[in-house]
Image (cartoon, rainbow, N blue to C red; front, side):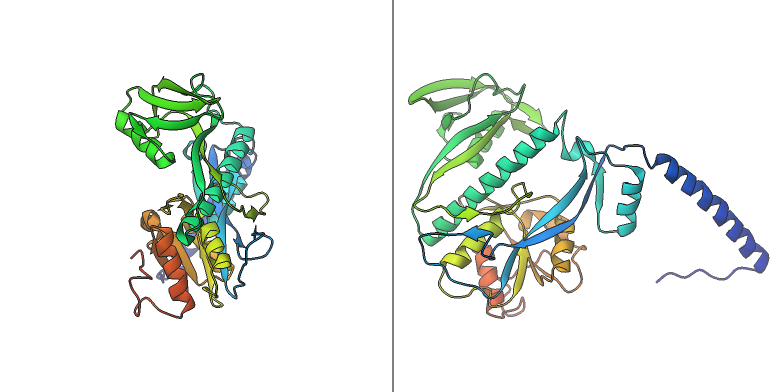
Length: 357
């Protein structure tokens, strides 16, 4: 704790007068800027959703097993961006609360993105994350399914616009087969800006196409939204409103594993987490992890599963009383849940419960 040494009386009175003058000036500046929009976005802790509750993930036609604990996905409130102004009072309030992050709008929403485009992209990301979660969980459970990589939408004015079409199935890129988004991304990155040869299936016929990528935020991109089009033997139903983005994928997959595996893995423990998921089980980084940890702590979670790639943002920001477990795959995340449910600790089982520190 910091303290300030006492000063002689005349000096103290002068300091008080100066504070009043400076305070009045600051208030005038704040009031003057209260109605001015600023190009910033505020990230603040959002609500959590227990994916084990009956109305979040529903599995029909298969035996499911109840759990006594919770597996909560975490969210971030976004204030600002296209169609929503941020004013001086918003920024001041976020700064005073101390639980929010204030970032330039261009870091979150590039270019001339419209509110409709943002909402559409967010819905696509949520749908894709749910499909990937089902695929990852089924892979771990040994349940067979079929998968295709399909064009879902095209970015206006992007290199792929006018070359690819919605519904195209991508079979190969850069001379090699691609089975998922990760493989295509690697092929595009390897091109280093040179035209990428694509083999697609359109209306039942194979086509050989070429797209020249452009660089965006240090990455080569084609400007296309893709989805893994899965055919599952049975498809769970996800029931979440007004929540978008890809970051709940890992928790969806863990929820499915819990529901479809005999026994109670959570065993009464409150576990939260975040992370994208690939159909192959890789857990990827997300944004706003500090705000998500705060939201999870406020909801009563003691354990938080964090993507290994986010550890740099975790260290030094873990809420009091919370234990963070570092995970890079669904296998590691499931092992952590099982270890927590058994009452194991980082000291007794450091392999299953590694930290970011």
